Length: 291
Image 1 (tube, one colour):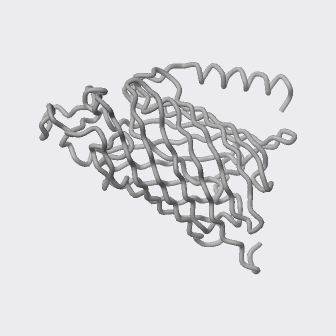
Image 2 (cartoon, rainbow, N blue to C red):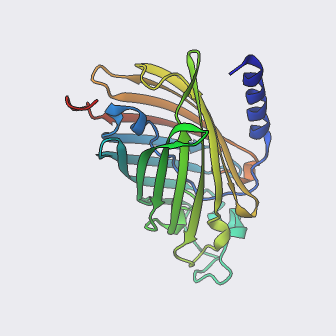
């Protein structure tokens, strides 16, 4: 890419980040994209903790997450993800903060629901499959099919809820620009309200997902990434965030990662302003007969 092309890309990214987010939508965690590109990452497990702070009103969130990665065939990866979430809503419960997500005929007592400000429960289990996929004109990439099951708790929305969410995404393999690599992704998600007790369709919009990530090569013993992601969903729902992370590998090939996420857009529509987290990725060494 030429110097002019890189400048244009940076200007476009800055303009996209400046656009406001207009509504809150259900939280989603990205697929473990690195698992397909790195042979040692196809099998293993990821342990992640993150905390959300700030926002108006000031909510606080904590999430413990476990992702188990399982090799499928020669190159594909299946994964199972589970989480435990803790949500402190202070004096502003979900329905008072976002009244537009209420069902037209709720079967709950809106005046008392959820009845407490500190909520804890297991999040929704998620199943996924990552498959290498080359697209015409776009080049080598990976496709991800992800299904978030409706076994959460509505009181902990937007971290978890009783909704079935299906996502199909495609991510371009990294393009090298000197010592830096860059990749983009695009996809679509479909969300279905599985309960109807509290939330209407506004709480579970459908639509486009896309993002851009830049960083050092995944095969390096240590490195960094800077990314931007957006979800442009129906009814004017938008969610955007910028993320920076740094990671290092142990002598046995496992990886530790520190990340910081900044939510973008109107403050009243964010879960929190910032998310800080730590991750430890256990990586299965490749078998001797693997390429």
